[in-house]
Amino acid sequence: MYQPELAGKSLRYERWDQRVGAFSELPGLIGQLGADPHAMLSKAGISAEAIARPEGRIPYHALVTLLQEVASETACPHLGLLAGRMWSLADLGLVGEAVRHSPTIGDALQLLVVHQHLNGDGGLTFLLRRGPVVDWGYAIYQPGVLGEQMYDAALAGAVNFMRELCGPSWLPSEVFLPYAKREDTVHHRSFFRVLPQFNAEYCALRFPAEQLDMPVAGANPQRLRAAVELLSKSHPADLLRQVYRTVRRLLLEEQHSGDDVAELLSIHRRTLNRRLQESGTSFQEILDQVRFQVARELLTSDIALDDIAATLGYAAVTPFMRTFRRWSGTTPGRWRSEARRQPYQTHATLS
Image 1 (cartoon, one colour):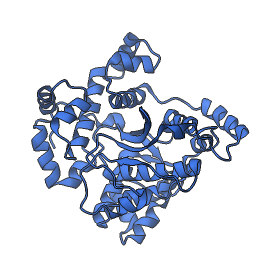
Image 2: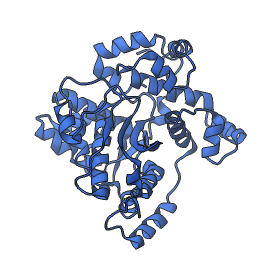
Image 3: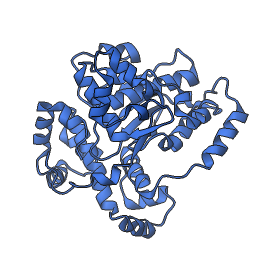
Image 4: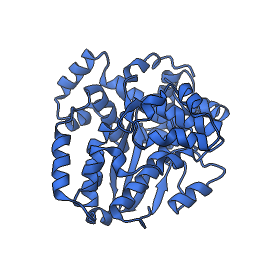
């Protein structure tokens, strides 16, 4: 689709990548589903050598494209669940080691939220306290990358992580997915043991907040200290990635000001503006791109336009519709209709 104002920005994200981890098993899974792994990898722009190594890294947008392409090619709409079920904390490398040996569930999840970027750019893990419950989820923030399959994979992996931390019988009380309900939900019901709430504003597992205080069985304080010490020596992400990730996180918390971003990054607002200008962009441009990303994602669902506008921080639907047209050259309603006519085109890479 034509994007008059936000076109031509993709080079900024071409180096955003994902640690392979358990996705190294994807070629075998693709073969089991009856497709040619080498052909599918080539079509997505991923080399067989790169995805074969769990410690290797592949482009984030290419991974999302691969999951979407394989689901379409093999007529397997629950591919993401199959991919996510292969994950364990060990597949997160050093971050997984620290999570596994954290003293409590809350400590473990918070550590993962803080250090998850070491395993991948383009998507973030978040933890939101909602009174007596907690939502632990995943949000894509790389502009132009939309992927139902990636969300399914993230939540399936998250269930596995929680079962490692809490015990094999752990189950979420609710599951939220930010896309339209599928015709066949049997695989989701079977895996999560609860019917997900489709057309949600974000992707998350919900569980009682009291579980955050549960101790992690078998946690080893010495192994935790060793892992945290090594994590402290990791190089931080560059400023652009930090800002994109922080803006997406703040939108989940119904905030979106540059001052809020600067505060979270422990940097003066004027310094933030200057450094973004030196990088050829501005805070408003990044905010627009992240909002546009979230808007397109939610438009693949049946969420009302008023609710989408509120999620993005607009006081009413009219300014959202006007801004969306400026970004895309079309109205949200027309974009949604096009998405339904050509679902794969709008669910892969749009940059």
